[in-house]
Image 1 (cartoon, one colour):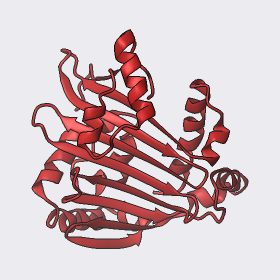
Image 2 (spheres, rainbow, N blue to C red; image 1 turned 90 degrees about the vertical axis):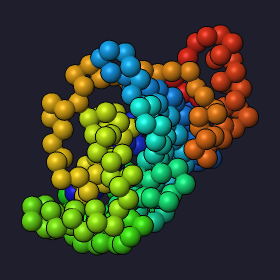
Image 3 (cartoon, rainbow, N blue to C red; image 1 turned 180 degrees about the vertical axis):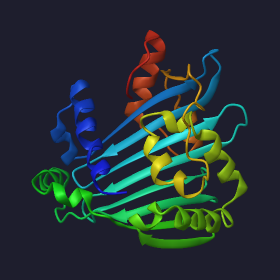
Length: 254
């Protein structure tokens, strides 16, 4: 684990803003964007209902993925928070109330305190992105910290998984295992597989295990769905949803 993978997402988000006709300068005031989609199997069955909430500013960005397993009704929240002020990154998987959770956090080796300055620092000092980082893993039952490269060694990683699994709820462990090859195959959730799930799942090789016909399908936004996870829509977002329903045209973002 190193810093390089975490500086790739912001340029992608800026590109998304441009496609929506929004100036990247809007970061200064902060902006929230959402989208809604289903993960559908080859036989057209909905496996997961999902919504993505992105909050972006000059000093921090967060991506929250709301997940409902259609087969079981179980719900999960995947959260990623990056603070440019503190140069810290947190990845967390939990139930909607936070009663069961596991999170991974670490500091980035950059000194700048805004998004644009930090990106420029990363470009000017590419060697920083390859440096190992101190990782802290937290669950409701304990905390573990160490240099990321320590857990590249199989025996150390296996012991860590055993220790974490022993104090992590069965509900959360089962949910994480089910999301491999489906939820974790989605672009918004892939990092949670490599940064969080690898510390609790023994079999991390999902090659060939995902549904070959699996796809994500953008669907009509549902503010009731968002609110059930504790993320009510704003008045402006509700207006977009109402207009979309009236026109029958599904918005890419709301």
